[in-house]
Length: 443
Image 1 (cartoon, helix red, strand yellow):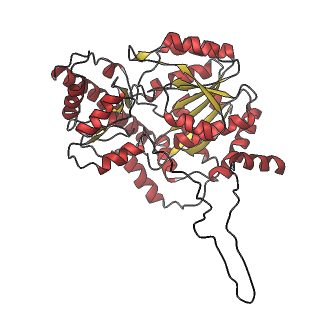
Image 2 (cartoon, rainbow, N blue to C red; image 1 turned 120 degrees about the horizontal axis):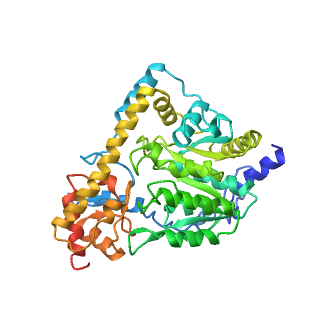
Image 3 (cartoon, helix red, strand yellow; image 1 turned 30 degrees about the vertical axis):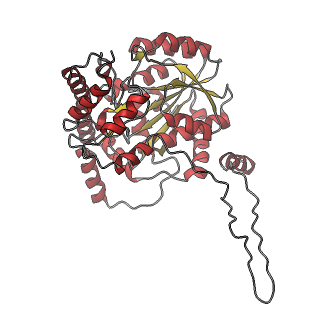
C-alpha cells in the first residue's frame, strides 16, 4: 500500500474538526506570563450526550432500592441465581493456558492464524471448500461491534456497488450507530410483524426485491436481536436466490450462533447456504455470547471471495485498516476460544455445556408463558415460546414498559424487548405477575 493511500485511510478515521481557541497566551521577558481568558475552554461547546438506552436502564436499575428489582435489558446470560455464568470448559482452558506460561506480547493485527481458522470452521464447517482453497479473508476483531465497524469501513473504502446499507426493521441499535460513524447511509426493509409477533416474510421479500442491484443488505444469521424471530429454512433458501439474482453484498451478523437451536451447525445454516449459493458474503461473529467471554471481547470478521489472490489482497487491506484503528486485538479471550476450538475434548464439552444453556432459555420461555396463563391473563402469549434465542419481543407498549419500571422496578427496553437470559426461577413469578397487572384488561 502506497504512503498516499495510507494517509487517505488515516483521514477516513480521523474525522474531526479543529476548533479555534479563544485562549490567548502572552509571553513577556524576563518572566514568562500566561494570561488565559477565564471561563473559556476548548470543550465549552460540547453538549451533554444522550444516555444510552440500554446502559442507561442498567444505571437506573443499580440505583433502584427495591429488593425485588429485575433488569431484563442487558443481553447477557445469567444462571438460575441471577449471577454471571462462566462455562466450566472456559475455566479448564484458562488453567491449561496458565500452565503454558505464555507471554503477553502483541499478536499480529489480524490475530493468530489458528484462532482465525477455527473461528471460520465453526461457521462455515470444518470441510468448507472456501477455507481449504483459501478463498476467505479473516481477521480477529474486538467482538461483534469491532467487526461491524471494520466491515463498514472496508465497504466504505473498497466496495464499488451501491454504498447504502439495508437493515431489518427493527435491528440491533448499534448497527445504525456504527454505520453512521463509518459514514454509511442506511434504510430499512420490513422484517417484524407487530400484529402476529412473527416474521413479515411477504413484506421482507417485497422490500428486498426493491433494493438497488449490488446494494448491501444485513441479515441476522440466527436468534434475531431484538425480536427473536428467524426465517425458516425454506425462506432462507428463497431469500438466498433473490439476493444472488440482485447481486447484493450480504453482511451476516452471527453474534448469537447456537442460541436459536442449541446447535452451532444448525444455527449456521443460513450463512452456509448463502455462501454455497455463490452470494458475496461478509460474516460478523463473536464468542462473547456463546462462550460467555463478554469482557474478553473475542470476535471476528470473515469475507468470502471468489479467488485466492483476491482473498490475499482483501486480507492485506483488513490489516491496514486494523492498524490505525486499534493496532492489534486482545489476546486473552482469543486464546481461550482457540484452546476450546482446537482441543476435541474441550470442544465437545463446550457444545454440551452450551446446549444446556440454550435448553434453559427455552425452558424459561415456557415457564414465563405458563405463569402468565396461571395469573389469568386473557392475552395470547404463544409468541414467547415461538420466538427464540436470547431475546423476546413481548408486545408490551412504551407506556406499559414505563409502568413496569416505575411501579414494579422491572427494567426493559422501551420496545418491550426482554433478555430471556436474565430470567430465572427466582424472579419469573414476580415478572409474570407484574406483566399481568398492567395487561390484564387487554386482549
